[in-house]
Image (cartoon, rainbow, N blue to C red):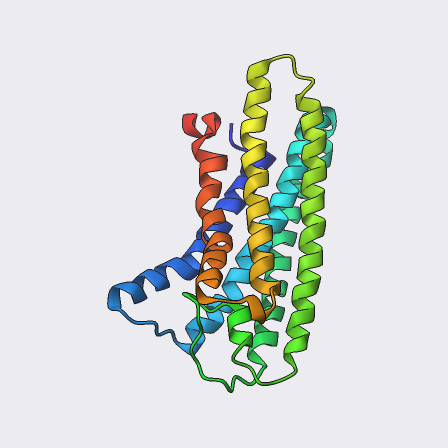
Length: 247
């Protein structure tokens, strides 16, 4: 019963969530228990690569999943044609591949800069904006341009998600069963809320000017985009899904 495109995408989402939350939380917990803030250069580079990799791939996957739900609800007779197994595999490969290339570009840009203002990152993990503060080179503009392009692409994905859900809501409102409408809204609205939270907080973390930066604000914003969505997604997509429970 779980061999459908939706559950195939959920499998990929689960792997991305697991990777994203494992990139920052275990190291932070270990440092807290040892009362230290140390991280190796290789470990810092790994965090700079892995978190953008998992988070960018996850956002792309959520866009595809919203399209999957749109086709399933609004164009059910074309579902097998538009989202066959080959198409799903190609979409998943594109998600992972684009995430890898994006993270590679981020990491190469960030660590090509000379870091001449110490080696203390004011965050519980190695976050790109915090590392850029340690640079005394004007080459950081390359990284800023990459962040601006990322923000534009993320906004496009968000618009596509919203458009998909608007079409879904229009179809759902025509369902005569109140239980059916409630089930659709119970899944769609939390999804939109988490996507909005991720996009808003990530944009604030990466694009806000340094003049309004403070350690407490940076910490809260970073937790909201790097820890909360991977932790909440299983609650939205899996633990409340009756078919998954039955399986």
